[in-house]
Length: 144
Image (cartoon, rainbow, N blue to C red; front, side):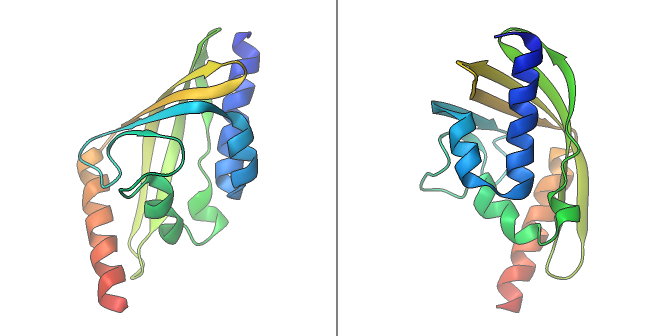
């Protein structure tokens, strides 16, 4: 596919994530899609598809993104080729006690057959993100 079409696929993926449109995401994901996350995060490591036995991005972030403001990712395509797309986006969250996280992420995405086949995310401040997630998790447990 062309660089422009691959960039559009990725922007469609981001829109579906922001809208929480799982059906559209499944249409945009290659059947053997891989996600590579920093190992220091609760959902860190490599996962295949949307599920898995350990916490994943969705299970971690949906409770921390109660409004459109937190779900907004502001994706911006930085570069695209016939195989890969680089996107700069924002990870936002809100803890149960009102603490906020808003940090940039650079993602490297491989598109195959017009679908997302591989994603690798690079957080600018993984330490701050891990701290926010630990705090937010502790607050969620304390309030339940």
